Image: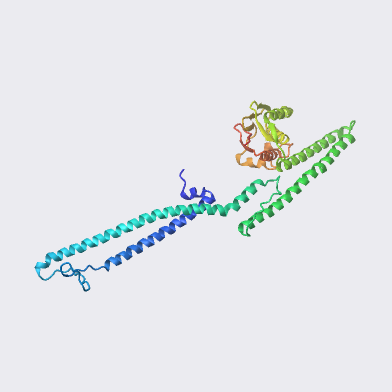
Length: 401
């Protein structure tokens, strides 16, 4: 596909475009100046040639005329014997005029040629100078870009701290630093909330579960046995929800430390843990983890990531369905059978507390599995994508850099 010059120019770096603008403006100004000079030179030469007069006189042999020259009138004398001389003078005048015109054209061509060569060389030098000036002008922007790349959730204390005159770039850097101050305060507040919620929310649930188990211990009347089981189930689901929310908040904060994690071994362990759930749902799980795959990351978070992918494939399936997991050199793929998932609604599955209606709305689960998986993948600089499976269900691909 052919690209327009504007599209090609838009793909160049800003510094190259700025240098090209310098060069183009200088070239246009030089062409306009050269055209102006050539037109004036042509007009002035024509005026000078029209004002020239060629004089002839009857001077003594070898003597120059002492008085002013008389302009030659190209008219034939009255006597016929002077006609050849007049014709010779007219031919001489025409020859002189042609010679002057040829010299004028040659001079103009040479002037245009060498002026054009000089203009191109000067335009090239102007482009180089524009490149250097653009680099000097954009140096603060480059330093701001490098500093912004180094700033993340783990080092929000770092600032651009641009030095120099109080100009537009300096004010832009100060605005970024002010925004980073607000972000640092927000993340610190979130970290404190996660640390406090881990204790303040989980402890009462543990006390509640213990009280239910002790206070409603056997023997119980038949009517209270079902009530106890319902209360314990609600308590367990609330605890799972809190754990999922805390895990989501932890993965959103990024990684504090990494180590090499064997995903093949982790996948086999996860599959073994989920085997009872798969057998209960009547789903066959097939794992191809012969290819070794080691990635740097948090082993706990990566285990939760694979667990959420496999559990999601088992939970949203139909009896007699299957789940296939496969590892290759850089990716993990999990496919399952099940209800058809519209492609336009797949992005909704990665949002917290979002589930599709109908068959994908289960009695258990909170709609956090894929959102947690996507957050953990992003923390490990990996990408998690999904598309409808050929046999229904989803095909999830986790690709590491």
